[in-house]
Length: 328
Ligand code: SAM
Image (cartoon, rainbow, N blue to C red):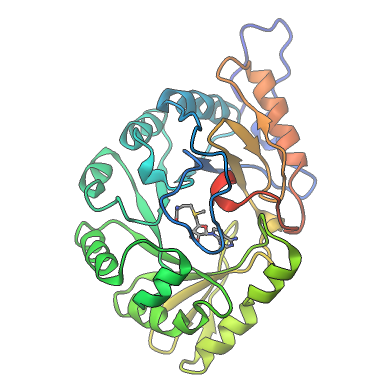
């Protein structure tokens, strides 16, 4: 299949889609779009850096135009809307409508959920396909210590409502040693009883120094050991491009671990990241984004995508950015 050719150029060299790959066969198929770097939480692992209060929020057309151009060069299968906190973005439904109009099949949102309840019905109506809800504990004291601004009763009501509306849901829990590692089993049981897949995330070294990261890091094997204290577990085959490795317990609870440090998925990573200012990143470990504009020609977009692809690393090396900046 050939990408569209830029009519503005007399001698365009648009590559066939199957040639836009790196030497490991990696390409882009999914986008993580950070709608804004602002967040209403102060998570212990992702506190907002200074200087974001005056940030300019982009209009939905801005993102849609950029993605439309990228989609012409490399067809995009799925877009994850994230941030910062994407439900703070004032035009969330317009972005979803716009992305659907350019034929993006699957749109999901990663959210702390605080503003989701009143938006749920409308977001489903405009085409939101699934939700990844971040929830790091079931205990109110621990939620507070993690930087969460809502209590567990709020989350239980929200989760019931998402399930009532039959919107596919996953729970993400980032595990920090000494903070919420004692919540792994209660979270697994809560999610498992409701047939919700839960994913435990290893703490990624982003925007913090080595020592603090080492002190708070709770590894994939520690997560597995914790679960095996109460359950027998069976590993499931890994789907290509999946961020997580999955297991099932003897009680039929499905859980995953996103182990960027212990077992990175970089070798078949298909993600392209777009930050809230329109810069693209081929890799979460990349500090410097490549600015993309809606006025770029197809050739320019193609070249920028190729540079982003060349920046893809083979291993996660940490990042100077916090997750809320680059989009988690
Ligand atoms: N505000 C939204 C939310 O809370 O889901 C979206 C953005 S948040 C950065 C996305 C996810 O990244 C959350 O599940 C959060 O727990 C996770 N996260 C943030 N910083 C992290 C880190 N350093 N290591 C691992 N996960 C992290």
